[in-house]
Amino acid sequence: MLAVLKWLTLKLFYFNSLRSKDVFFIGKRLKFFIEKGNVSIGKKARFADFCEVQARNSTITIGNNFNINNFSRIISFSGISIGNNVTIAQFVSVLDHDHHYEFIENELKFDGYDTGKIKIGNNVWIADKAVVLRGVTIGDNVIIAANTVVNKNVPDNCIIAGVPFKIIKQLNSNE
Image 1 (cartoon, one colour):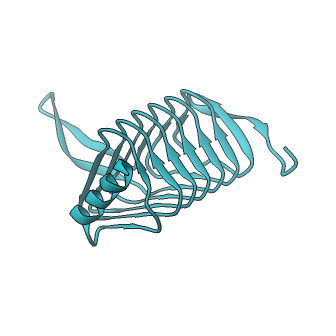
Image 2 (image 1 turned 180 degrees about the horizontal axis):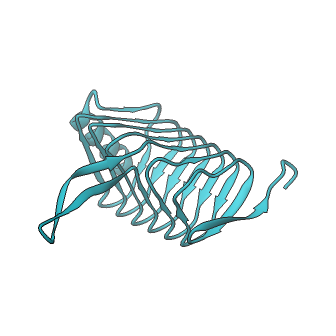
């Protein structure tokens, strides 16, 4: 019952900016923020405790059977698309932006963001403490090992690991 009330409160607060095909589970202290953007969530979604989802002047689209675990975050300034059957473990960051910086007279200055859309395919498992960086596409049927930094595109049907990542195993449909 409490989960339904949390969902209803979120839907009412973000009215036109948040679309969902079904009631979804919201853990405690979810940080959910939409500013001039949209979030669309499919059926059977679960947001565990202390997660963060932000759409700032962008769109986040999440498919069916989505699960994001404690302390993970999805923050978009450009656009993030997540397919069906995606599980995101604890302490994972999915960030479609970097801070734009330059040195002016030997002083570091931040000014805006450098962005690139992220696309995560279907049947993807992103393990603990992995980071998905701007501008990448992750294919279907992919496992991303713990502590991996995804800084370039990932093909379908593989397991990746490392910093920078390497394909450590090819998967086939019988596995």
